[in-house]
Length: 352
Image (cartoon, rainbow, N blue to C red; front, side, top):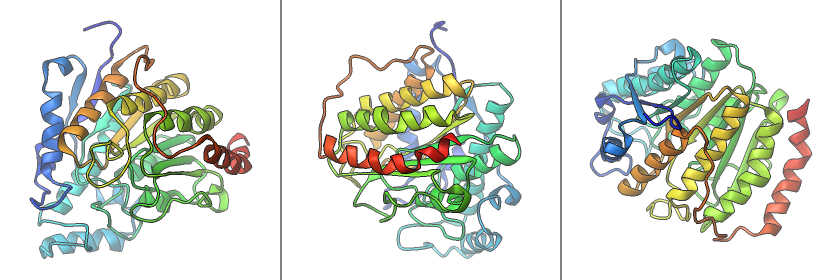
């Protein structure tokens, strides 16, 4: 193996394909397309396969109310079809959701044991829209929030950073962690878009005030704008925070080809974001990174972007150069300055 490369753990199980609906955007073909890319020869030396184990109810209830867990289990047992107008289930979905959450936990375990530094959990169903007592937005249980709470309570970490680059606001993660000061949550998302949350003034409450950062972006935003957002907002915050673990809700639906959104990111944009966050993890978190799969509904675009993320994570010296980062879309320097000024009022909380 090239000495300038390191293995990236990939959590996968064929049972993740059981939860599917042929007429729904969030279907098994999303994962099959990703796996087809990862089976290519160019990824042979980059990927280390990790087999998940199912999470227990006690793991899920670190985030979700017990009656919600029971309600999902009962709905699957009765084969009700949908939990809401967007979120389908099949009889096996409850067990698959436990395995999906368990994939994130298995990745975290391998990271904390020192067996591998960076893990991308390809669990389905996704999780970042699932709130404490509600499944929504294609999500049953909140995989990344469960893993973050486990990192805090089991492994004793008290500076955990979650960056959600899915095109839709991570309302479920925000809902679960809104009063938490040991987990910093940053969501970068299109506005307006589903689910209609994630505004600038949603900054956390109680001891969590200042640890919830929303960066709503206009439709049409592209690579160059994301570079500005990262270099002038996201990365400075993370530099101040000095996370012990970097987590990513990795939804690739900000891609220009995605049918459910209106952003203009390309594969290079995803490489840049992964590379930038890798540098933060390498600098402050001993390289520890855990990613969970969220959205992304153009099969080839999603798969190609995931491949670029894994390539970025595998580079020991990861500098994204020579790529197309031209300014595009509707985000101007003026409204970026407004965003920075607003955030400046509560960045101070991160330094105390």
